[in-house]
Structure formats: structure tokens, C-alpha cells
Amino acid sequence: MQLSFRSGGFIHGNEQHLAAVLEDDEEEDCTNFVTHCNNWTAVDIPVILHRSKLVPNPIEYNDPSPSPNFEFPVFEAEEESDVEVSDELSRLLEQDEKTIQPFEEQIELVNLGSEDNVMEVKIGSRLCPEFKKGLIDLLREYSDVFAWSYQDMPGLDYEIVEHRLLLKPECPPVKQKLRKTHPSMIVKIKEEVQKHTDVGVLVITEYP
Image (cartoon, rainbow, N blue to C red):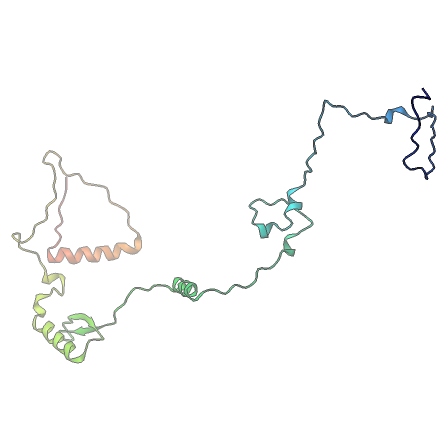
């Protein structure tokens, strides 16, 4: 063998190499000896964080159901800066605040009769003087056309208008029970009914 093979020397001939063998320690714990197996794969476990730590300011992110986080109390939230409102929006807001009142025309009372026989009518107070004078003269000229009291309208001709109650002949009228009225209204009702009765507008009938 020595005749067939010869040593070629070391690649790094200038360096000194030491070969040593460590003896096994009998007291060494063999349980820490770990061997890698080829029948499994290493998977990274995801880290779970609470939502309050991910979103430190729920007001800014507009979370509908923010989790309570006592590290960021509500009173420490950032204050909203003043935003200028546009002129158009301001005009609409002012218009909504205004209350719309019904139109009321200014009127005045004019007596077309005398002090004993009062015939009052209402006309607009903002009419021009000439038109107002002409209107008053016209109303006085035709004052007999208007009904100033119940005596002036005893009734209408049946050929002009007639009101009837559609009753079935087989159903006779029945006297109903009196309805209770508030005491404060009884006197006024009696006065109005008496006025209509005296003139003949209402006729008292007796039902069986």
C-alpha cells in the first residue's frame, strides 16, 4: 500500500491542526436531545390581539360597536375642529327656523245703516281712498240684498231649493233620548234655538 499511495501533504501546511476526541459525559441529560422528523411541517401560530389595541381611537374610526378600552377614556378624545358652514346651508337653516304665519288682511268695520239699525260690513283697510268710497256707496245702495238678522231670511221658495230627509215609509220616527250638554253651552244653545224658532226657520214637532 505504501508503494502505491503517497501523501500529497496538507492544503494549509503552515497552520497547525489539533485533533481531539471528547469523551461522553455519563451525567449528561439525554432528554434534551431533539431529532428532526420528516413527517411534519412547522406552521407559524398567528398572534391574536384585542380589537381595542388595534384601534386605539374608536371615535376616529367610527366603529359602531367599539370595545371598552379603559386606557383611552372618552373625555380624552380629540375635539372636533370648527368647520365653516356654507352660505347656502346657513340660509336653509335660517329658513327652517322661521315660523310661517298665515296671511291676515287688515280690515275695518263700516256701518251701512244708522246708530239704531246697525248694518256692519268688513272691508280691507289698505284700499285706496277713491276705491273705498265707491265700494261703501255701492254696498249702501244694495243694503237690502243682504240678510242682517234672522227676520230677513224667513225662508226660501221651494222652487229654488228644498232639503228633505230620506226616510223609509215602513220605519216610523222614534224619539231619542236627550243628550247631555255642557252646562256652559246650554244657555247659548237655547238662545240660538229660540231665535230660529221665532223667525220660523225651525219648527217644533212632537214625535210619538
